[in-house]
Image 1 (tube, rainbow, N blue to C red):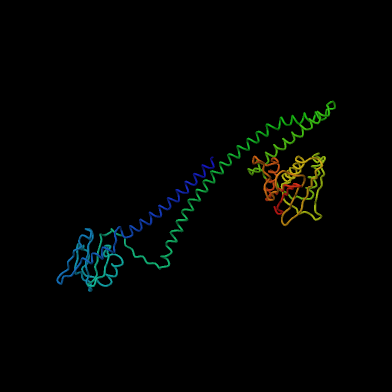
Image 2: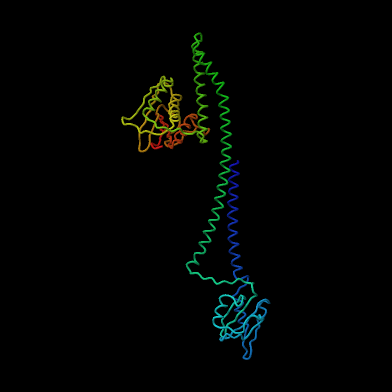
Length: 401
C-alpha cells in the first residue's frame, strides 16, 4: 500500500513538473511575442500615419492625429535632411540632419528618443516616443543561427524537465529504499525471534528423542517412533536455518567469504559428509567427475556446501530407498557446473527457471530449492531445475568470480 502511495506521489509530481514546464514555456513565448515591440506594433502605425500625411501643393495636411498617441511625436525630413513638417516635436530635436545623422538614428536613437522611420517619395517620416519608454537594440544574426533557436529552446526545456524528473526519481528511490529497509528489518527481527524461540524447545525434543532411541527397555515400535520424532525435528531445524539464510540473502545481509576452491575435492568431501551423516542409507549413491581437472573457482564454501547438501537431502526426502542419486561436476565454457540427479519430482521440466512453484505460489519442495537458487545468484551464477525422470538440478557458477 505504501509503495502504491509512493508511485502515485511520483506520478503526481512528474505530471505537475511537466505542466509547470509547459506553462512556463508558453508564457515565455507569449510574453516575448506580445512585448517584443513594447506592446505596440511599430510597422502598421507608421504606414497608416504616412497615409494620413498629404501635400496639398502649398503645405502638409495631417489627418491621423488620433492614430498618434499623445506621448508620441512625428516629423518629415526632405531629401536634403531639412524638417519640412512636424507634430509635437520636442525642442531638443534638431531641424537639420546629415546623411550620417539619419543613418545613426534610424538604427539606434535620436537624441535618446526611440524612433521609427518610414521612407516616402517626398522624404523620410520619423515617429518618436518619449525617452526611456522603449528599449531599442539592433540585432543581427545569420540565418543558420536563427533556425537553431527552436532547437536550443527545446534542448533547455528538456534539460529542465529531465532535471526535475531526475530529482523526483532520486527522492522516490530514497523513500522506497528507506521503506524497504524498514520492512526488511522488521522481517529479519521477526524471523530471528521466531528462530530463537523454536531452537530451545526443538533441542529438548531432539535430545529426549535421541535418549528414547538408545533406551534398552523400550519396545522396537517406540524406538522407531522416537527415531521419526528426531528425524522430523532435524527437518524443522534445517528449515529454520534455511529461513534465516534465505532472509539474509534476500536482504543482502549475508557477506560472501570467497576463497579458492578445488571443485573435485569439494564434491568428494560433500559426498563423504552426506554418506557419513547417514542420509544416504538405502540409496544408490555415486559421484561423477571428469578425468580432466575442473577449474578452480572463488566461492563461499560454506554457502556452496549448503546448496549441494540441500539438493542431496531433497532427493532423499522425496524418493523411496533404492533410488539412485548422482553428484557430479563439469566445466563448460567459462562456467563450472555442479549437478545433482536422482529420483523424480512433481512438475514439468523448466530449464533455466526458478524452483518449481506449488499451488500456493511457494516452492513446491520447501525453501531448500529457493535457497539453492539464491546461493547461485549471490555468486553471479544461476540454478537450473529440470523436472522429470530423473530430476536434475545444475548450479552454474562463473569460473572468474
